[in-house]
Image (cartoon, rainbow, N blue to C red; front, side):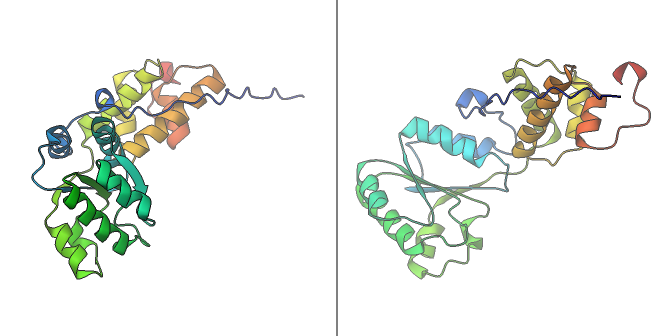
Length: 231
């Protein structure tokens, strides 16, 4: 017997939206959103968005960069180009608490931003007090920053995000499927993006709608009591 080969879906790119309209606001990120929208009326020249992976820090930073025209640089190599950019306008550094960060460069960048009257946005997994900074002067500068911590999304937020991600792909999914996913995936925006991508590809490959049974097959064991019409 010759088995029929499965049809593989085309590798279509679905870029995550990083605009203000794409953002789902909840109690977890409301304070951070307020800080972004308050710019340029910040209480300090330096702002820190802290939160776990997948909390939406990159999305918020992208909104701020679009709003402010900020230049972006890597945390491990803050050189003359970043210092020069700080003299011209706002600057953004992602993962500022990552291992191997350029502390001397960051210290000079903070000073350059303050001297020019511009702003610096830092994203990080932890608040500055937990960074174990070796340079006392940098630690002092970071203590003066406007720091906001973002929590993981709650179930309602995660459901809204998953629903929107499917809608962005023009895929209709029943609310019970969304709730099934919410109860089983890691509570993060990155996990939501990943599961939506996997399910969309599986549905295209099988030429089938996204049901709870398909979700169970993709992310884990199928529930024994799944309704017959959902199999």
